Length: 169
Image (cartoon, rainbow, N blue to C red; front, top):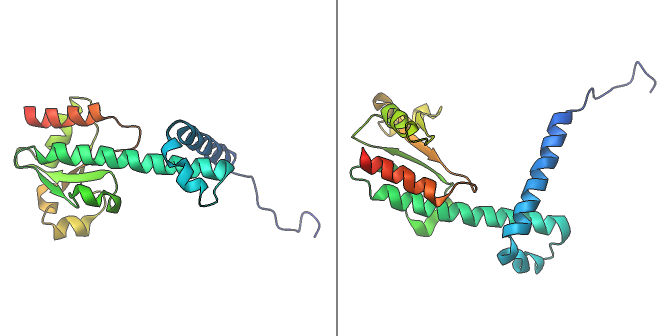
């Protein structure tokens, strides 16, 4: 039980600790600004204080991402010949994340990503390390798919810019 023979955990991950603290502060800000529609429901289940604020923050994020996903799916569905993979039913948005993969016969996935980059739209192309899935979908030989990922801080205007760029191609 005396040094230097006893077990020590080593240096703490100070940057990780600071990052987690900042993330919690950020979520608390979201909860305070956008969580009021959800506060009563969570408070009635016994949540209070910081835990309540974080619960309503995550609910606000979830609802925002569902709205963004709906707009994205709606816009992509209007692009001729574009094939969306995964759930597209707006009634089932709770079952998916706000990330959409698609292919488009006008351009390869890589050419589509490069084209969208000209408009300041960031997306990914390829197989995303899901090689077996892309093989099963028959997309690996075609360069995979384009992937658009949204988060709560994205805007409807950004989604509209994406669909406008695809229509303009």
